[in-house]
Amino acid sequence: MTSYSQPPEVVLAGRGIGKCYGEGPLASRALHPTDIEIRRGEVLVLMGPSGSGKTTLLSLLGLVLTPTEGEVLVGGWSAARASADELARLRQRRLGFVFQQFNLLPSLTAVENVAVPLLLGGVAWPEREARAARALELVGMGDRRQARPRQLSGGQQQRVAIARALVNDAPVLLCDEPTASLDGETGRGVLDTLGRLARAGRAVVVVTHDERVRAIADRLLQVVDGRVVPAEVPGVAHSANAAPPLAPTHRRMT
Ligand SMILES: Nc1ncnc2c1ncn2[C@@H]1O[C@H](COP(=O)(O)OP(=O)(O)OP(=O)(O)O)[C@@H](O)[C@H]1O
Ligand SMILES: [Mg+2]
Image (cartoon, rainbow, N blue to C red):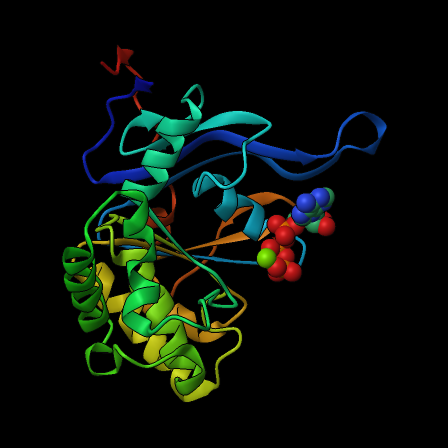
């Protein structure tokens, strides 16, 4: 894997990343080549109309999709020519993904659900349980660790899903519509949780249609017709939305 020197606070970046779905005459462009940086301790919010490319961009950043052009840098390491094993390791150690529909396993307790990603790392159960319990504490769900998903409200299930994304101590949390299926009160609880995690040093990217998310945004970008454009955040200088260019140097991972 190639690494690039970039400011230490940049934990995730896309350099010219774009995406076409399909090939040949059936190809359709979902995202034009885009530069984007995500920094430690910030909440970056991506808004925009349905079908504009938000989930595509988040999935590229989360190494869930492969870009048609450009490359994603995770902690300075380029994912472009990484092997399948290296990609899995980057995803597991550096990135946490929170899905709109929680995707919790119904037969497992909260603590067992949160511990699932640790299975991949070969961690033994007592440690998996201890780490999962700590992640649940972080999202205010420490007292519900033995509950199964059906015994929890939507907001509580979403907080368990956030804990699962945090359990590997990933520095970046990528959230796709995390409040979409939640009512006002529970949605606000989840947003508070995401804001607190950013203040504690995580980088949080939130894709949303929910105007309330503006309240926790440090930076707001809009995705319109597959292009990323700055958007105004009350009280935040406009220039703060523009990402400075990356300085590449070539170093090989050993
Ligand atoms: N797997 C796919 N194959 C083909 N086209 C796709 C695929 N996934 C998304 N698209 C298309 O790419 C474009 C962007 O989709 P994307 O899901 O990124 O939008 P979005 O901004 O997340 O929308 P929403 O707000 O409705 O979730 C859309 O035109 C969509 O139809
Ligand atoms: Mg989407």
